[in-house]
Image (cartoon, rainbow, N blue to C red):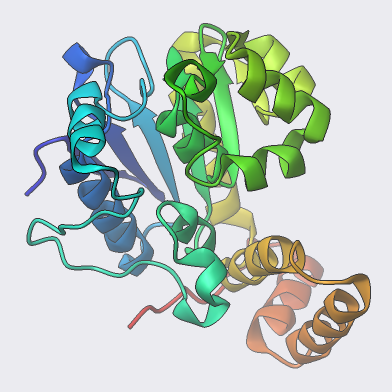
Length: 279
């Protein structure tokens, strides 16, 4: 089914690997469509607790393929929308979260399950956007984050001007965007760009272990609702956010997951929470 990525379910983790290693996994329109379809597949699989996006070979993603960028320039630019689905018709995420989460890669934030980017080697341009719009980033020690837009006569594209200031502060975001300097894994974690910096040879396994722990100890519906809270409430005032949270909290105490969580704790056993059903 896929030409530019691979997809594998390993326990509760769905691993999506960008698979153009000879091009440092530079993005093509087909690859973007395949990533979207694979995330949709992971979201619908009740056995999957979370998805991981990583790169084959020595890099995560070098950004958009330069030949594709050249064709955009020749055509006068068509934005970042994926115009073809290549027969991979699938709409991931919760459309009820609204239009904020329907642009280019922002749909990742509307997925009902955690998405972790395991960044190995170079992560640049639109590849940086892909990683930044995931819920977490596990950076390998040899990872290198870079935004090259200023060196191409471009602006901060694909949601970076929105997401970077929110995860690392406006001054650090501008530093990366303006200078296009290389930020390695340890510094990326210090700046807030990476969630963790881990040994290169164990980065993928660390992410799998993280998701395995979520699968064993947490309620999938709770993960989904908290993800919605975090991303949606970034666009809300405090009063609206608190009213939404209070409403969710009142509802959650009457639901089966809460009852099972309390019962499992009292009985000193692993909880058996319901799975998320999509469609």
